[in-house]
Image (cartoon, rainbow, N blue to C red; front, side):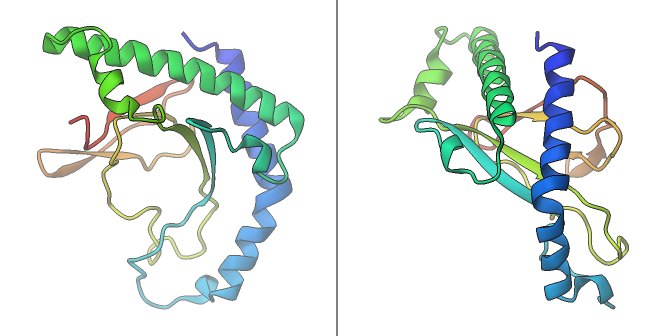
Length: 183
């Protein structure tokens, strides 16, 4: 139910923000750590450039430097759509588990409300992809994770029956992942 136009705008503005505000900082970090000349595999490094937008219980959007007003507005609109989708999915899970509608949401609500935010990640080209992998193998700890995946760069994998399975990138799609707490 999220419009393709909104998804395209989020993708475009995110890539513009990375190029304008984060790319040079990432290159400087790589150079300062000597990562462009590593000779042996590095296993304890995530090759990503990220920032976090928190919406609930208290927003941090006004505190994030370098975000222009258009990007803030679009991310707020996108977050509202993702929140509706997450709540709908949680209600479907309740229905399928024979639970009262809203039960899972209330369990995750806590005393200050739910934690809800966006991790915005960029994965720049790596000079040594055979020695530095993307992200370390991990599962997600939270309740429900909605991933707006790049449609050109693969790399996402899901753990099923102790095997990592590739998730092919699909345009205008949201990957739904149940986190460890919900599972």
